[in-house]
Image (cartoon, rainbow, N blue to C red; front, side, top):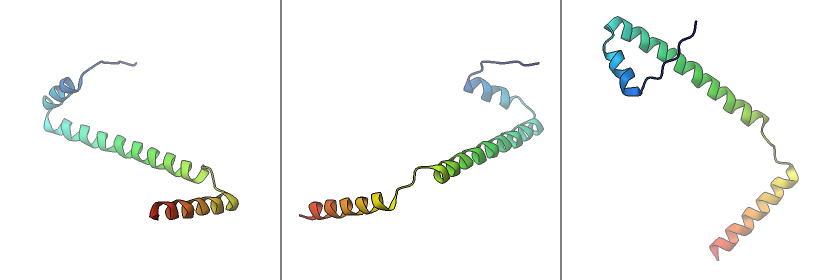
Length: 77
């Protein structure tokens, strides 16, 4: 069974404030768990992006260094 509700943030806070403290603590624990899971997923996505991202060839890196050198000289003059 699936139930979807369209509850605004303020309404949600009002509902939470009506819960007994034990239920609030359970909710807090569950939210922390969900947050940690999503945080791990985001870190994994970033790690995969970095590890699988484009890599500059040695030739392109030398070209980049030359361009940087020329820009630095231009900026100083």
